[in-house]
Amino acid sequence: MNLPCLIVDIGGVLELTPHTGWPGRWERRLGLPEGAIEERMADVWAAGMIGEIDEPGVSAQLTARLGLDGEQLTALLDDLWADYLGSANQEMIDYLAGLRSRCRIAVLSNSFVGAREREQAAYGFAGLAERLVYSHEIGVQKPDPRAFAAALGALDATPAECLFIDDHAPNIEGARAVGLHAHLFTGNADAIARIERHLGG
Image 1 (spheres, rainbow, N blue to C red):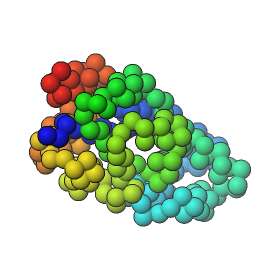
Image 2 (image 1 turned 45 degrees about the vertical axis):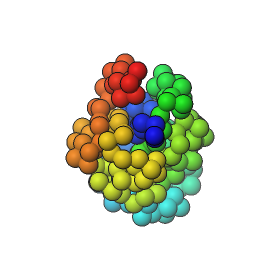
Image 3 (image 1 turned 90 degrees about the vertical axis):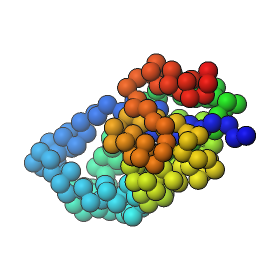
């Protein structure tokens, strides 16, 4: 009999990611109007989330659309990734690390190109989960049913066997629509209690 499975989001669950306000700082630094970075880069951000552009392509578009020199590009990317990576939700990470004998774990993340390498360097997620499923690698984002299917396929699991944890309500609704058990993450204590119920603890 297969062990039960757990599918976990990264940003807002395994990473604490309060917004740092980097776009506003850079708009002021570059003399751009408020909201200009999002307006000029929205299609690039969207492409990066589903792997339709690579990191050199992102850098080229930032340089061209924002008028950056090389030093500015490096500094802006540092700010972007600091915001993206946030900090470790260490309590949740440590708890999940202790579950490997009790369940199968996958990560399912709406992710930007380059995230796997940086998150591995910062947090070592490859040692936490059996499978890491990133939207920029599979070409679709949650709550698309294909994203959940990719995570289930990676674990060779059925929806009924799995609990999905995410901090974004539309993703919870999407998971339930394909038959997954799902819990909206609002804090560690509630999430851990829900996982324990799923595992029969």
